[in-house]
Amino acid sequence: MKKQISFFLLATFAVLLFACSKRQAEELKPTVPTGPNGPTPVTTANVTYTNFAGALFQTKCNSCHGPNGALKSIWLFNGLASVKNDTRVANSVLVTKTMPKGGTLTVSERELLQAWFDKGMPE
View 1 (cartoon, rainbow, N blue to C red):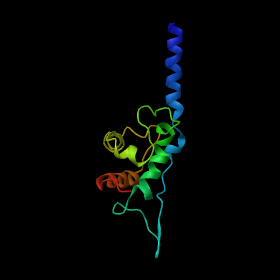
View 2 (cartoon, rainbow, N blue to C red):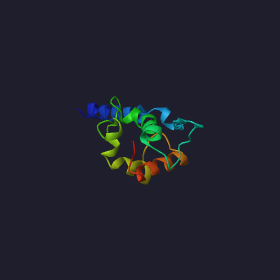
View 3 (cartoon, rainbow, N blue to C red):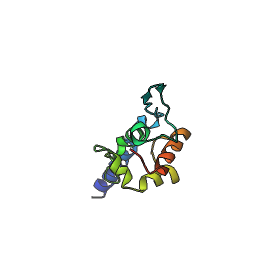
View 4 (cartoon, rainbow, N blue to C red):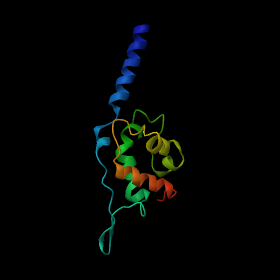
């Protein structure tokens, strides 16, 4: 019985350790909407879920917290509503900086995400 429990714990640990993809470490390139004068860079003044935050969550969180992720029972990313309805997201990413596991956010990504939260998480 103890061998089965030990094996189960070891297997669970291995799954959690390797469940998150290396893709989380990639720097996210914000979507740049095209205006009449060409591309419009994403800044802290115009950041939205559509032009930045959604892609960030998809790239950095979805592999672990998406519908097929090992950590979906802790927090399930399924779009804007899942971020707006859970204060743990901003805390884990911006305050304690415990997320994303196995990846990092650049200074620019953190600034844009902070601005997005500060602006009330516009779509």
